[in-house]
Image (cartoon, rainbow, N blue to C red; front, side):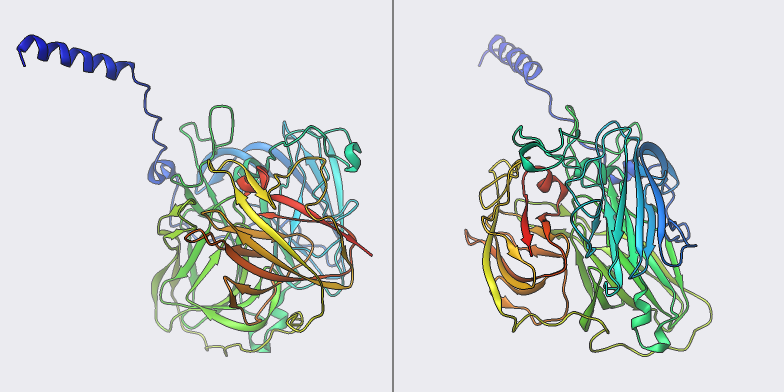
Amino acid sequence: MTAATLLFSVALGAEALAASPAAPPQPPSTAQQEQGMHPGRPFKDPANADTTATKNLTITLDAAQTSFSVGGKQLYGQSYNGSYVAPTINAAPGSTLTINLVNHLPVATNLHFHGLHTSPSGQSDDPFLCVAPGARLSYRLVIPADHPQGTFWYHSHAMGTSCPTPGTAGMPGMSTGGFMPGDVENQVFAGLSGALVIGDDRTLLPKPLRSVTAHTLVLKDLQVDATGHILQNTATATINSDNPTVRTVNGQLQPVLSMKPDETQLWRLVNAGADIFYQLQLDGHQFTVVGEDGVPVAKVTTANTLLLPPGKRYDVLVTAGPTAGRTTLRTLAYSNGPQGDAYPNTPLATLNVTGTAVPKLPTVSGAIPTAPVDLSTAAIAQHRSVQLSESSDGNSFYLNGQQYVMGAGSIFATPAKLGTVEEWTLTNASGEDHPFHLHTTAFQVMSVNGTPQPYTNRQDIVVVPHATNGVPGRAVIRIEFHDYPGRWMFHCHIAAHEDNGMMSYINVVP
């Protein structure tokens, strides 16, 4: 090649390079997003919404765009009452809980009281209610006297950004304009979620354990842009749950929780984030599970790790070691499937064992009082199938081949009847796991991928495994329908998936 030809070729290469589209900017790393935050501060529980009411509670939640402190750094997002982690609501079985939701947001919102066994109709836990910008709505939750004592949570369940004309298509608050993505991911990711505790499940433990210290650990993740705003889905930006993320505990960055040697505490663990999983491990320790998804367990188990998909809760006993020292509460590296996300090993908090040792308390075994009965021998009134799938580009999601359409009916032609038990087979044809959630009641998992599951608990979220070598993942559950007629919603609890179609409901009739 001559020199002239070489120069001509280099010039053409430079011109082609200049004309090619610019590569998309790389998202900021977790370390860059954490700049200005202060790790290692003393652990703090979330604020309580009210600590004075003994039976009936009335509180106001102001939903607004605001700034708040996360890890000691001022960020911009959305909040209930000005805090990134919303105040913990405490209510007693047999009480009435009134929550006045005031919407200061520029878009519609509402509330869902995740896991509560209360009416899905009227001014109760009805996800079809819609609160327009500038409006307010009073929710009235009548908590049954026999309601399970445990840990729940509440969050926005906005089905869209505006409130359509009520009454269209026989579905109040819903439109007939075809598929409309919801706004759950934006609002929960921005901060609209918090813990809700019914009763005090320490009272169900053996007497020596009833006065142990209890802590609530609300796990939330966020992504921060260069201006200090929590990322939102807009015309120019998209939340990508696989991007570098800041993980927080009660809005703190790697706080330090102190215990005395041999001390036992009750930890209420809540994944109150929008999309991502936590695989929890407390290095050198075990979790003793006494409650799952707000329901006392029928068999106490111990675990080295706990998987918390979005919306999951565990009530666990943790006993410190016999000597002083420090260890780490972390979320382990985890992938939810070849087409899903892959999360890195990330420290969440430090456990500091310090001071004078205390007498070691007895261990717990067997069933926790008030645990629900085993449904293994129940008569099955109806078998149903729910297939979970998604489009090849991962942007649209389906149940039984249908993308949830505003104003349309249930994927099931026949309703469920109160007083019956049904068995549902959930299959997942996609390449990522889907955490399936049912409103209004907890269910029993019978098998996962063909492996029978011995009865230890009921739960309101189960991870349906991804397909492997073309074979769909499978989970079989049994649901006891009791107390409340109405529309019981179910969906994938990855907020981006429910927003984009993986949602429906079943009509429950007397």
